[in-house]
Image 1 (tube, rainbow, N blue to C red):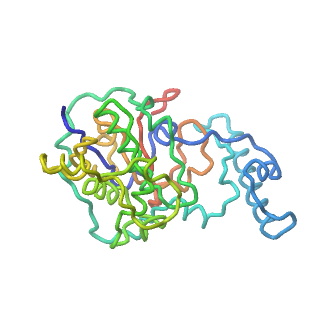
Image 2 (image 1 turned 135 degrees about the vertical axis):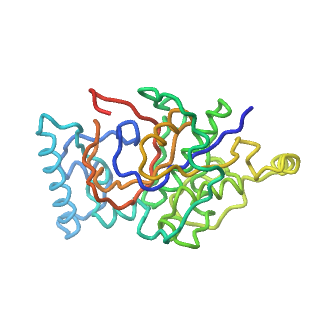
Image 3 (image 1 turned 90 degrees about the vertical axis):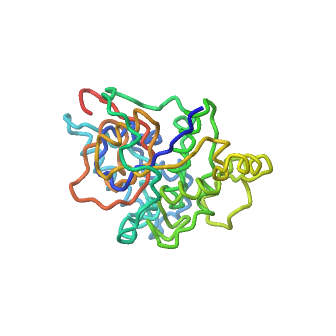
Length: 317
């Protein structure tokens, strides 16, 4: 069996080709009154409190903006309510959990092969979406922890492990959050305060990974658990010389793709599998469906997501 070669997309992808395919989003609710929104999402704001009034004003402003956007008949994407519509921008920044401004100058990632050497020069299919994989049908929820980097890495690992073995295998995002060191503050201060998918991939390559049932996701920082290593794994490592865990799920390395280049990302998706991508996600907040085209030319990387494919919708890439 050929080993699986896991791929990490480099920061910074600013524009998406097909947001519906690239980012798994929960189905947005209809434009409901704030009182109904509070009840639906079990908010505990006290009526007539300052916080309640501020949250309501913020929510209603977003509803008005979404309705205005949706009133344009030539729009490519539709806005809709989601469970974060009463969160302020500071809270949303913390949630996205990837601060590109904190990456040190010259900060790189471990690349086990040179860029482009593993991608075959062939015509790309018009569409490729890894929607049948287990990870695409079981989307992880990071909660209020800035763990997008760990969620993206664990999701990509799950996709490639299934492609390699033909069987689903989970990877504990919680273990990655608690165990991945971030001494240079790449993308944040580590754990729920942000890091990068590259750091997560490197940690898993060296140490292996527990499954979700062994270290369930809590969305909180904590002490790194001694889970995921066992006698059989140690024996396999002894005979193969592989990194811990590599023999059990086929990981031999990972690679950073060139920044902001469309073809290497599309080719990696078509020929290898899902890719972890660092993105500027602040303008995606109201996205519900369609082809998102609201990215500006200037952007700050602030989130990590999993690209699961590309294609066209109504003639738009």
